[in-house]
Image (cartoon, rainbow, N blue to C red):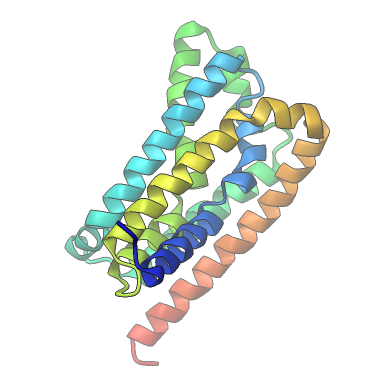
Amino acid sequence: MILPSDFLFRLAAGIITLFVILDPIGALPFFQAFTANLSSTQRRKLASRSVLIAMGLLLVFAYLGTLILSLLGIVISDFEIAGGLLVLIFALRDALSSEPLGASDTSHASKTSASKSLETLAVIPIATPLLAGPGSLTTVILLTRASYYGVIVATVAILVDCGLALAAFRATDRLNKWIGPSGLLIIGKVMDILMAAIAVSYLFEGIQGSIHALGY
C-alpha cells in the first residue's frame, strides 16, 4: 500500500515539529549530568524508563489532553503559563547550582535510597519536564486538534521521536568520550539559558492568549 504524498509530508512535518520541541539532543547534557554517578547498566535502564514514561504522558495528552484541560477548566494559555513557570524555575535552579540536580542524592545515598533516586530521576526531571515538558505536551495536543495533522500523525510522531530520544540517551557514553565531561557541562549550562528563554516565550504566549481571551 502506497501512502499519499500529502500524508507523508504531513507525517514528516509532524515528526520534525515534535522532535524540535522534544529536543532529545538538547536534553543529553542534562541526562549525562544527572546520571554521571551511575553505571552503564543503570544509565541504560534509566534511559528506557524515562523515555517510556515520557511517551506515555505524550500519548495520554494526545488522546485525552483536550478533555483533561476542559474538565479542569484550563485553556491552552493557562497551560503555557504554568508550564513556562515550571521550566523557568528548573532552568534557573540548574544554571545557578554548582552541582547537577540529583547528583548528590545519587552519589551519597544507600542502595535503597539510590533506588528511590533512580525512580525519581526517571520521572522528574528527565521524563518531565525535559522530554514531556509543557512545550511537547502542548504540541501533541495542538497536533491532534489540527485538521492538517490529526491523531494518527501525532501518534506516529510521538513513537518515532521517543525512539530517537532513547537512542540518543543510550549513546551518552560514546558522546562523553568524544566531547568530554567539560564539554557536556558547558553545553548543559548553555542549554539552561536556552531553556529559560523557551520558558519565557511560553509565558509570553500564555499571557498574550489570556489577554486575547479577555477581549483586549
